[in-house]
Amino acid sequence: MISAIQIRKGMIIRIENAIYKVLETTHVTPGKGQALMQTKLRKLSDQSLHDYRFRSKDKVEQVYLETIDMEYLYAEGEEYVFMNLENYEQLTLASDVIGGAVNYLIPNVIFSIEMLDKKPVGVNPPMTIELEVIKTEPYLKGATQSASNKPATLETGITTSVPQFIKEGDIVRIDTREDKYLERKKS
Image (tube, rainbow, N blue to C red):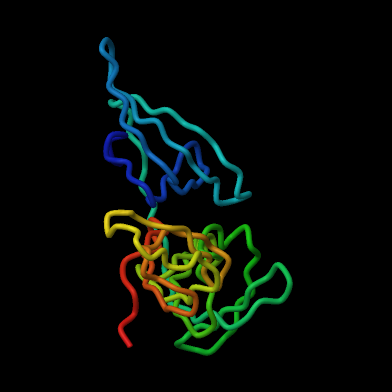
């Protein structure tokens, strides 16, 4: 059991015999009264979203999931096929299990599949991934270096903010935890 103020994004917790993944946390300290931990949770059994408020003295059970590294192979409509790297078995997952990782599905990339009682409940992409820029505004001559960033659409359809010097066709490294540009791939 952990204290409610120790709950962090990405943790798996059990509340009243249901298993939830923590999507967001906010520690609230009002001027009067007790501190609270406001959370947004995803129920793993049916993928429904819940807002839950814990008092600072509440205790919750942290659940540990088995993780298996699997290679993403291809999509079939709204289902995605992964291959276990140890025994080469294939696993088909629906988009609701994959969640936000769908923005990073590129063939031959290794993902961590979270399993609870031998059933897949979540997919985690690698910490960083390289994607091609397929659409962005051209570089503006005369724009100052501090003229910040511009939007770019990447090969998986995700849009992120990139520096002015990035052009279509460039390969960029993205932080998958924050959907944030890190650097341009060196040629």
